[in-house]
Length: 185
Image (cartoon, rainbow, N blue to C red; front, side):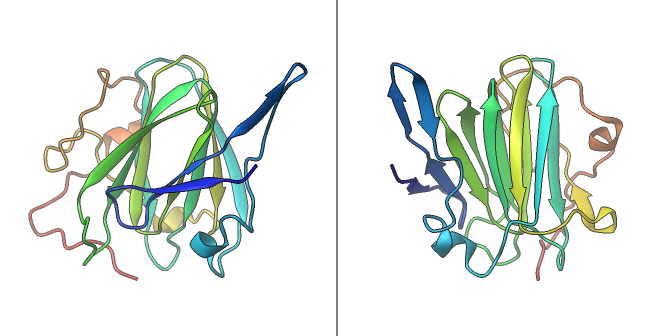
């Protein structure tokens, strides 16, 4: 019962499908396997695991990232409910620079996204009381945090629902400026 990896239009962003083994007792799903993800992780190691729960349908969290040298690879999955997960490539020189990609993550579809360093991440709740599990390759550093507005016209993200319940911090993130050159290690 291995993990299945699929590429996306964002350079280095990988969708991981995690099949479940179901029988009359219930189900079993492998959520993480270092061997299966070794090529993606390289020398990185998981140093922090976080969980979020978001109550209201339509709520948006993000778009968040950490600046280099504290940029982090994130492995994100929905363990309860459904979310529309969005990644924006902010890496200077990347072939997918300033492009966004979204995937529906749910407890049912068991998908996980492996988000490379230098990408912003956010999501919108599609089902009440949705929970996300995040595996990080870098510790959270408040001084390295950054963010973008979910409604930045330069990104033109097509959120499926009207955005609501944004945090004060997320409402204050800046819009991209015409001279934004991206993040670089």
